[in-house]
Image 1 (cartoon, one colour):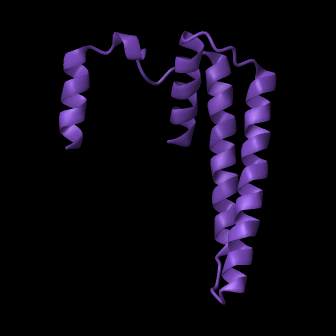
Image 2 (cartoon, rainbow, N blue to C red; image 1 turned 60 degrees about the horizontal axis):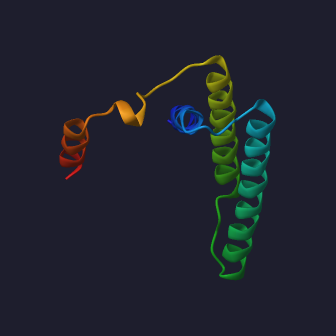
Length: 103
């Protein structure tokens, strides 16, 4: 799902005039990887301080899985793949129906 969210978000940003060349996409991916590594380290430190077992390997693996999905999303976006219609193409009735289905 991370892949689809990436493509949809990038597509909508592009429709709004935001340029997302491969250099920007790569910077986003590297930023994610750096942030997830830092977050895992902080959570591990907190757990150690509080005497709680922290599933470091599992968390690290989830970070790798999400980073790979983000990378694939960047590739799909560059290839022109889309997963959702433009927000401007969604009618008010469709939005209302979607919101009501969440309730």
